Image (tube, rainbow over all chains, first blue to last red; front, side, top):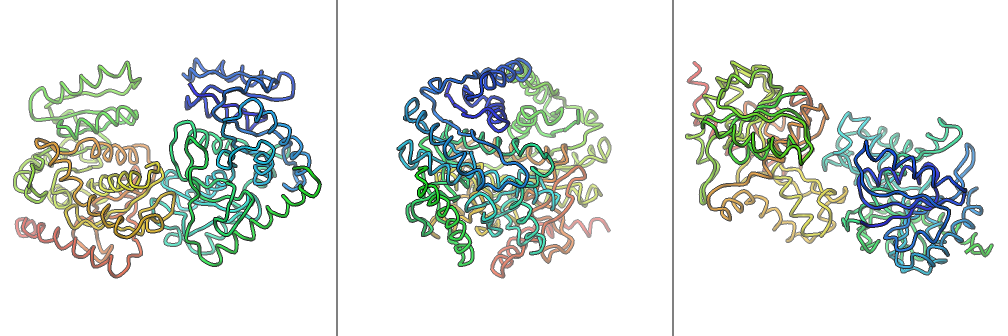
Length: 311
Length: 312
């Protein structure tokens, strides 16, 4: 059985562990610095196993050494966003947390694949890459899968079609500058501009852009975790089972789409080695500009961190 | 638990029963005129249930009465192709088989949704509607669901990607002139034209067109059963669970795509009422011409049935 370590046992981490167990993908180690938190969550999940029929193990610990030999390490640690707080507000706090976690990963699981979830995730993936010294393809961020699943849900809901028939590719940085591509969003392969008016598509895009904030505004004291965790489990499955799925993920760019030296959301082929391939779409001029604009926002935050020597 | 009757316990009918049971979509009744055949296959499937963990019932019989109360009736009876045969060659033999089945369904399950696989599928689906007097949204065939599954697998193999991420739309008649629309064949929404050179796309299309024959010629004594069975299961599930999926299937056209009084493969939305909507794609001129040509083949076969004049 393969092994997945999830660092951070908040709602996203614990829900990821649940999805991974339900699909019997791997044994899971939950790690959290808060004494007892990971242990309690893990115990609760394995106590459901006899009813839910999974026979994978879930362990909880505060000890980073227990991630040894993990095939995948998911990083969800960090402070969550509160109402009114922008993703960038979280930047400095979380950069320090991710930096110290990355050192632990390099020490105990030097051959693993890192899936970064902590926001701002395009930037945190960069921090993890630099601090761990990992090969470029072994660090990947989870954002596009989440933005796409939200867009797909909104789309299916609007059209009254089955969510399983929908596809969507949301690129760019995670957040207000994300780049949804309606041309590539389909229902059973039919591009949505054939099925919806432009106004309606714009509304779906706007709702997706603010999808995270919409949940925060309802919950008031917390943020989304089921959909993000589903995104994590999907990516973990691709790596563990070498599925070679094409998913929008945050990957380190070396000139693709004219972007260099940062993480940004693009379609990638995800397999056992992590980012197996970056797919370059034939983007229209405006689409390319939107992606460049999104990338420049990620870049400016990375530069901010570098100026403050947080990377 | 809902009930699905499958008429014809050959390899396609049995494969469909297997997939439906594995997915716990409904209880299944297999019917075959050959005494004992349906019962044997059903019993074999039930004896696998304790290991596989499904708790739906699969029964087999040669008694058509037992289809009473079925939500869906799948027609997988009749003869299949041998090497060198075309689907249209099966018409005369299968017409007689279908006539008997229509009578039974009218008598015992007049409100069921009918899914027909018996070839030639477009013509016989049309025949079932006309001869049986069924409402057209409640009768459909299986073609696009199968053909597109084949193309999707070929795309996944060619690109070394997961077939889960692929989509394809294949419309028109289920014969050599099936209309394969590469614009709509995609990987996670990306058109295959962005991922493959034109000659590769063309070779995948050619292989798909001949994919049924490829299996027939490999097997020598039989034709494909698993992919058709999986396609049936997909459609049955969409109806039984009212999932509103969009799947390509031969449907009765009344002006859609510029055709009337004919059954042809088009994207349809499936739910508890059968075909709940026909999706009209914005075809280019060349695509429309290909569709019309494909329709012409089916239309000629339908004319040869001389249904209208017989009715008078």
